[in-house]
Length: 373
Ligand code: 5AD
Ligand code: SF4
Image 1 (cartoon, rainbow, N blue to C red):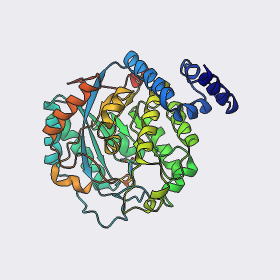
Image 2 (cartoon, rainbow, N blue to C red):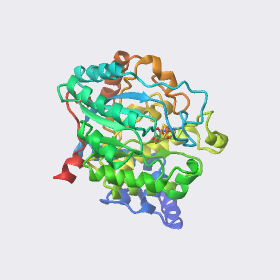
Image 3 (spheres, rainbow, N blue to C red):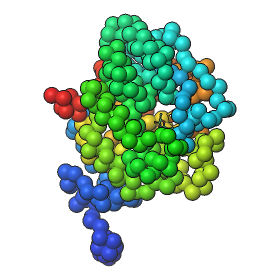
Image 4 (cartoon, helix red, strand yellow):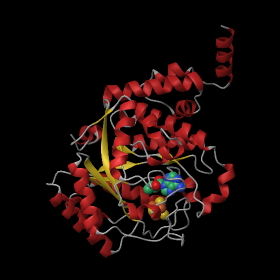
């Protein structure tokens, strides 16, 4: 009784509401989101329980697989956080050859993944644009026009997006990284334009792609207010799919100098969990990925994310010999594991999360279907 009274007095002093009262609402204000992201102990447990219930009610317990091919680590950009930035001369640059990509696509198709993601650093020369267009056609042909293809190839011209859309890609992932323009400027060098990124997201939506975005959590200079704004940005943009995870430092990047000012890895993981949970409550019918970065900070990271809101996993199908060169951040998991081992492990993890793999399905975002109907 005394404890409860003290808690109430504390909430009143900080002008905060009891967590239950916030969670019973249909949507949240920025202040309420900040309070949810600060939840600890029993409050955090209530947040997770609510997110889990919403997930089960709206998207169920199916988890969709997207086979991920990290197609090329060549990149013309220099994002201050990323291990494969153009300025990192320690990286051996590669592009996976077409036969290998098609073999990975076939593997995904035959294993019943339903879809794949082609990701790479950012290139926009005519040769790259052509290569992707041809690859898309080859993949479609090799998989009976049935495999769903998502691209994650950065900022491009409208005409390029359109060509790739017509060649078979139906979804596009382009993380906003940080929805606050000032924070965006602090984690990117000059010439990396926030407005341009926003413009690309709008073009992709106009071209009828299922649109994915996301942010990094626990960046230097980032506040809880920034993160609350990120979630509201995702909601206001009517995004269909989200991949977000903790920021993890990489030694050969400019942001590494801030490594002692970051939240601990445990705090970054916990905050990422709360971001996933709040997002699931805010956007009930979207697809949310359990990201590799979450797994990097916690051995059961993916499983935990699925328990409280995520419904997509992207097993890495990049041929083994390239994996050491696609290190966006330190301690990236799954470098040594081949696809077969990964799948067995994943099945167990997903089952432990009370979910199941939905094989042979595209796993389109329900939000996209509702939005475009
Ligand atoms: N920590 C976490 N995520 C990162 N990414 C790039 N560098 C890092 C890092 N150091 C993410 C970005 C990018 C995606 C491909 O990987 O969000 O969009
Ligand atoms: Fe290139 Fe993407 Fe890394 Fe930026 S985050 S440097 S665009 S690969």
